[in-house]
Each structure stands twice: as structure tokens, then as C-alpha cells.
Amino acid sequence: MLNLIRIRNYAIIDEVELEFEPGFSVMTGETGAGKSILVDALGLALGDRADASMVRQGTDRAEISVSFDCPDTYPAAEWLRKHGLDQEQCCVIRRVISAEGRSRAFINSHPVTLQDLRDLGELLVDIHGQHAHQSLLHQGAQRQILDLHGGHQELVTTVADHFTTWRTLEEDLQARRQGDEDREAQLELLRFQITELQTLGLEQDELEPLNTERNRLSNVDRLTHGLNAALDQLYEADAVSAYALVAAAAKELQSLSELDPGLVAPSSLVAEAEIQLSEAAADLARYRDRLEPDPERLEWIDSRLNKIRELARKHKTDENALASLHSRLQTRFDELEKSGESLELLAERTQMAEAAYFTAAGELFEARVASGEKLAELVCAQLRDLGLPHGRFRVDLTQKTRERADAHGLERIEFQVSLNPGQEFGALSRVASGGELSRVSLALEVVGTGARSVPTMVFDEVDAGIGGGVAEIVGRRLAELAINRQVLCVTHLAQVASQGRHHYRVVKLTDGVTARTNVRELGAEDRLEELSRMLGGVEITERTRAHAEEMMSRAAK
Image 1: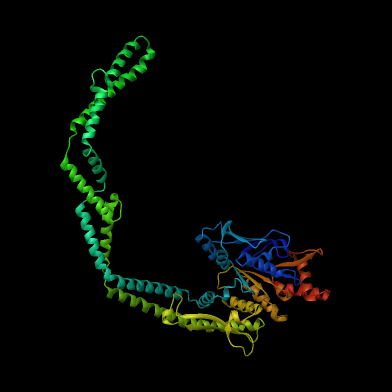
Image 2: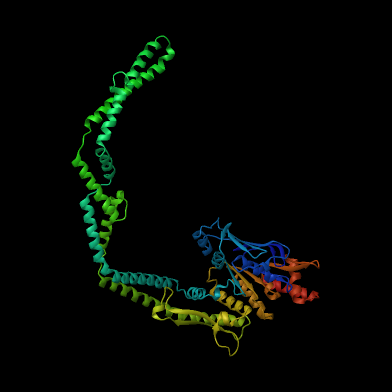
């Protein structure tokens, strides 16, 4: 539900902030005061195109913010969750247009595209009377109205499910037919590759130890020479080895520490170094004694590493990944072997799914034909009450070719009207004017008792070309519609305005140099004056006021 709109520096509006309530709200004012500008501003916030001419002269940017209550049950709430824009059951949309014509858009403070605004806007507001944001003109919305009115939801879901199943099986069948010839070739190749890897028998952690051993065996002479030199320097040289020098120092410090306890700690460290040098020398001597050439082992390791490298290059993978590659190839081989469902069985399943779809779609077509006739009869009755005495309405269902069948069924659905004597039926967008289209929309909404899920409806020009009793009926229908929806109507007729629960007056103020629009909600007394003005024109008499008061009283009942 729309609860707030804030407009700054847009057209002739310098700054307006309006809070809205549930139910039926009306907006009135003199011609040219800017009533439709407010509707245009709302449309801009919901994704209409913008340009620099919309920015109030002398300012650097226009800004429109709208706030909606958005409970979890609203389709808009699901859209916000899906796009990661939900915020505590609230939706704030902001649109900023610079004086250079650049535009930015935000949903709950996150920057978004204009398409995002349009997609979300269609779930929040239906604007009737202008073509922007009017979902009634979309064939998808017309189909939804017909199905909701006829109670076809379960059958619609069945048709969509059968279509998905059929198309999925058909795609699998085509892929199988195209790929079955390659299957045996793939299996043969996989069989050969797996055998190669099995013959190699590479274990997961084998490669690193092999490389380490090869480095040792291929450098035996260098290692032996280096170890001999290191052991000579560390331990084996008689008088100049590191061990001999450290041992002598340790002995001297031991005797000195008896003279001064301050030398005990460093003396201990040197003694430990003596022990560590002795142990290191012993470990190195043992390593040297075990070190010996093994040409046969080195040749075997080189051969195995070459085989590993060759297979890795062949499979274009890292040598360390060969073991896991073997596992993946085996899994793929098993999958191909298990995918042996016969083409005949798959074709039979596809045929059954196709038959199930066309059976369900045929039932849906018959149901739509029947409910379309009932809907047309009810809408025609409403059109006569709404000041379109020659108005005719029908639901045109044109069957599609078999090739163009889709998840929505076998027919193309279009709402058509003929609003004047002798006029042929035509699509709503081509036949109805703004005011006529609003009344057709109103008739559909009343008949459908709110079948569509858009929570807020705005009617602009709904009373164009009507008056008297018809205007009062239009007002009543809007009030009835507002029992379950939020309805905002821009009107110039007192008969419509008197039906509103909340009344806003738009006025244009000027100082002779600039003009600006102001809007305020009217209390009971001001509302009586506004209705009197709408009825009586320049001179408002007591009789006019009495008439306005009677209208308000009758509407309240």
C-alpha cells in the first residue's frame, strides 16, 4: 500500500509531501492546478522515462520518493527478497533527475536500473487512465484476470507442469538421438584412458617421495663429498674442528663459573652446544655410511617419472592431478554405461507427456471459453452503468498452432471492446481512450472483485466525458473496489469526489513570477466547501452547499 509520496523541484512543484491512507482517496482541484502532475510523478518513480524538462526551472535536480507498506504476502515482497532488496516489510523507491537529464534510481537505498523500477512498480501500483504501468493492456495480465475469474488456477498449474515435463523429455530425446552414435566412441576412449591409468597405478602421495629419492640417488657423489667436508670441519679434524674448539671453551668456562656464578648460564649454553655438535656429527656420519649409488633404482625411478609426465601431458593436466583424474574418468564411464535407457522407452515417455499436456490444455481452453463468456456478460452490464451504453466487451481466444503451444496453453487471449455504435471490436490499446479505458478497467476490477494482486490503484480521467448519475455510479464502484484495495482517483466531478474517505485538494499558487503546486488533505468543513465549488463554480450559494452536504451524507451511508 502506498503511504507516502515526497516530491521536490518537479515541474511546477517545489516541494510536496503527502501521506496516504487505506481505502478510497480522491484528489481534486482547478484545471491546471497540477493534479495529473502528481500522478506523472508517481509514474516517474515507477520507471517512466525522464528528461531535463521535468526539473523545476532554476533548480539543479528533481527528486521523487515513494514509500510503500509491503507485507510478506505481497508479490512485491517476494520480488524484493529475490533481488536482495527487502527491508522490514517496507519499500522506499527514490528517483533523482538532474537538470542535465541524467537519472538515478534507488530501491531501499540500493541503486537499481529503470527496468527494476518497472518490474517492481507493476507489482505495487496500477495506474489507470494513462497507458504507463497499466497492466490491463498486457496479454499476460488479461490471461491472469480471466483465469482468476474462472477459478482455473489448478488447471493452469497442471498445464504448465505437463508442458515443462514434455519439453524436458523432448530435449533429452533429441540430445540422445544426436549423441547416441558418439556414446560408444566415448566409452571406448574412456576405457582405454582408464586402463592406461590403472596400469600406471599412481598413488595419491607417490610423486613427492619419488622426486626426493631421485634427487638423492642422482647426487650421491656430491652428497658424499659435501658430508665428508662438513664432518671434518665439525668433528673429525683433530685440533681445529668446531667440536674440539667448543669442547675446549666449555671446559674453560666450567672452571671460570666456579669463580663467578654469573658465568653459569653462558657456560651451560656452550656445554649444550658441545652436545648438539656431537649428536649432529653422529647423525651425519650415519647418513654418509648409508649413502651409496644404486643405478638400477635410479633408472627405474626415471622411467616411472617419465611415464607420469607423459600421461600428464597427454591429458593436459598437472602430474599431481593424475590420481584424481583416474577417479573422474571412472565416474564418467559409469555414468555413460548407466545411461542406457533405450531410445524407444524415452520416446514413449515423451509421447505420453505430450498427450498429457494437450489433454490438459484442451480442458483449459474449454474452461476459458466458458468463463470468457460469463466475464463478458458481467463487464458489459458494468459498462452500461458506467456511462458507456453502447459498450460491448468480449474475450477473444485464438488457438495457436501446435508448434507455438507453450506453458500458458493453446490459445492467445485478448480483451476486446466496441464502445460506439457500429464500431468493430478491437484491442483495448487501439480502441479505448484514456477515460474509456479507465472505465473498462474499473468494470473489470469490480467484476473480478480484486482478482489481480496489485495493492494500489490510481484512476486518472476515469470520469472524462460523464456526469450526473453515471458519475455517482463511477464513484460508488470505486468505493466498492477500495474495500479490499487502496484506490486513489483524480477527479473533477463532485459525484465521484463525495464517495472518497480521504480528500486532497491541489491548488496552484503564483506570485506573478513563478508558480508552484500545493496539496493538502481536507477536513469535513473544507471538504464541503470544495464539493460546493465543484458543483457551483464561481458563486457558491447555500443551495449548492446543501447539495454538496447531501452528497456527502448519501455517500457516508
